[in-house]
View 1 (cartoon, rainbow, N blue to C red):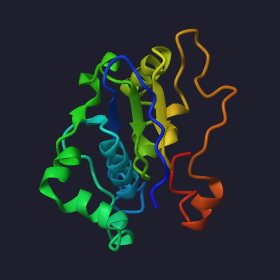
View 2 (cartoon, helix red, strand yellow):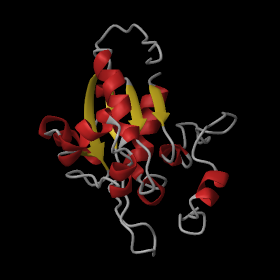
View 3 (cartoon, helix red, strand yellow):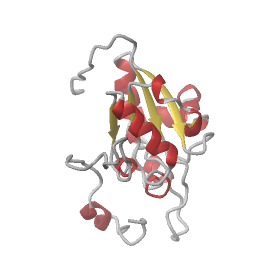
Length: 188
């Protein structure tokens, strides 16, 4: 059974900017990485069912690298497999907007999809930081899943304070990094 979705009523139709990583190398391991399939596919399904419009972006734009291991890990997950293989759905991640071309005033929500690749390009990307700050300061919602919250780590608000200061943030934990033996691989 799907959990209930609470959607705030607004004066304008809700619009979400779904942000995927552009990074495809897992440190110096020689392994491929990117964004994690179910962390995009399942939010997509929930937002779509709620009638929320979505745009898809990545730091560099174009095709965002899908972590191949997430395809294999979700081979029995119909939602994820459809998102990866259905041409109409795959265009979301194969033709992302460049983050520098995205205006925060167009979005009520910015959502950062997880995956190991995010650890390299989200934390210090000036457009990630700009969009988070602006959406947050216009009373929008900033959300992320798994490794995606690394996008929030270095965001400074207009007053110079860190966005995450004094807030509880959930994310992929050090114990989880240890379980997959990647703590020494990811940059921080």
